[in-house]
Amino acid sequence: MNRNRNQTGMKPWVGWLLFFVTMGVVFLLGMLAASITQRRAEIASVMNNRKIEITGIESRNEVFAENYPREYGTWTQTADTSFQSEFNGSQAVDVLEERPEMVILWAGYAFSMDYSTPRGHMHAIEDMHHTLRTGAPFTEEENIQPATCWTCKSPDVPRLMDSVGIAAFYDKPWSHWGHEIVNPIGCADCHEAESMNLRVSRPALIEGFEAMGKNVQDATHQEMRTLACAQCHVEYYFTPEGKYLTFPWHNGTTMEGAEQYYDEIGFADYTHKLSKTPIIKAQHPDYEIFSTGIHAQRGVSCADCHMPYVSEGGVKYSSHHKRSPLASMNNTCQVCHRETEEDLRNAVYERQRSADQIRNLVEQELAAAHLEAQFAWEKGATETQMKEALQLIRQSQWRWDYAVASHGGSFHSPVEYQRILSHSLDRAHKARFEISKVLAMNGYTGDVPLPDISTKEKAQSYIGLDMEQVRSNKQRFLEEKVPAWLESARANNRLVSMK
Image (cartoon, rainbow, N blue to C red; front, side, top):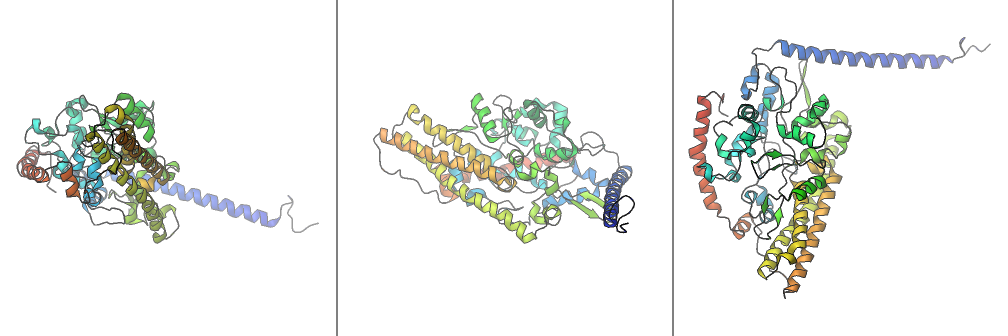
């Protein structure tokens, strides 16, 4: 008889292995159950210990501080502009100063006057007041932007949409709602007041899903932790009539799908002042580009990295200090990755540097294409001769803008980001080649004399902008209009406190 085997014929060590594996599984299941129970207890404690009852669309963010002091406290930290990385950070940086070619790319559009990197959510209203892109609307007739531009800047927007109607809100000048929209991006933008469940407060996202044959209501909670952000961090356009906010997702959420949709309806945001190209101005397709990346494919949400969970005492909650994950890597990247902060940060920078090299080339080539097209028109080129070159410029600029307008696209999906930029560079090259053929047909075979656009000021002067007058008008607007708007809001209890 073999003493090393029991009556079943099993070796003793196999039995011990099964025992420890079973104990491990039981332990892990116990930990999971405890975590779920703790989380439910935390939620119940928060909901049961609310100090005030909040119902409906409460756009005043400070009201929520009574019931949710931790979340509110971290939300106020979005006012902090101290974080800086190799590529951008929390500060508003004058991009046109760093990249004067972009003034040429946007000649004839408001972005050629002012374009800065974004700051935290608490600055949303302040930055809308100060940007030169909103002009100096002393009367509604003078206004150069529609009310639709307010859509993603304040929880006052869903309040107004609920009150006056969605289409009626859009179909007004930007200045019409200035006295109503005073609270920066906050609680009611993403949460139901009664339950604090995540919600979609912007109808354009619902309509965008419907255009693809989908129902946003079918989204899971984890998906909602991305879709709450996707309400605003997307590509969109305003319909020519009524300025209705629309997501171009009728052919899917890809860059090519949006371009196909715009081409089918013959849409252009503006006609370029120099090249006469009908341009599509990309907004910030963060959700679309993110969706093509490895993190999205693995089920990671925006909130996982930009609103990480933190613990305070025995309470675990999501930080509402929305910012770059690089600012708190121990709570973001290192939750899943075991590399050091230095290695992880360098991996991000490596992707960003690679993308930046292609971006620089595109902006140089595309700006030259616009300038050379202008020269061709001056030499007598016809619309028929310029048709192919203008189509290539339109395609190149759409791809360039789609990539660079996205926030973090070079990291969210580096392969897709660089694919789009490389296609932009290819079309810019082809456009310049087509223009050279047009010039030859009109008797010019030499080099095109290009202007000095080495600084923002020189580039703006070249395209005919009187920036001194623009800034003077804006200053008058800030002194006369904005104080009156805020005073009206305070008088009608739409604003709890000044920031």
